[in-house]
Image (cartoon, rainbow, N blue to C red):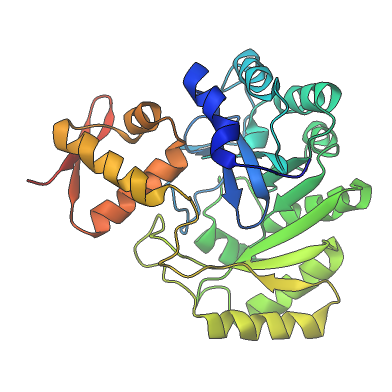
Length: 331
């Protein structure tokens, strides 16, 4: 269902009635249009600990599936939000961790497809669990799957993605190939470029071979535009991304596009207002990122990104306490 009308007017009734713990947005995404996000796992539960992650390092490096967030809670929030059939381009499984880790992922997919068939489903995934036949079957009904593959060598995979110790990049590639063979929807493969790590001839040739076998509908080149989990990670210049795009286009016929955005651009439309609200809150009392997300009625991903901007600007400091990391405004 295509987005139409005023975003503010569409959201206003929902925001007045209920604040959501497991839904975020809708936000205008540069890739997905007007997207309602669904969080299926707690903050930073993931099989990878990517050096470029914009929402800090993984705290729970796991591959075991479980009902990390009660599915009944998620379905209740979805039913409440979707009851008025608001206009959306996608309902997106994403958030601050790997969504397929929740053992109830398939149940949520079935619920939306059966009750709200007019909505398209998008899955943002690192693909690490697609080797599991159950996970693969649960993901097949999604209209758009956006997996990532940043390196096709084990060395590059371990440097960039820092996977849980049992994960091998060749198994990831094999699972993406197998999934693509059965999957009838759109697949957009994201490749995150880090200069000096995965831009060598060896790395690019290995990636191009893997992409040729996976056969996605589109390859999207991305690069850092906010501080990542590790300070040494720098934004790849546009000229490098253009060179890599040109090289890939000589290796396979799949369309390649550059989706990296300028570092100064803020995707979240309310970022300036949100920064002011965070500043106002921290000037009154120390808060965790989770506290701020609940107080402001937004997603922890957005809060974490803006906290990083304030930290880089020297406006805040942080202190680890028993309940977590508290952010304090500098006097």
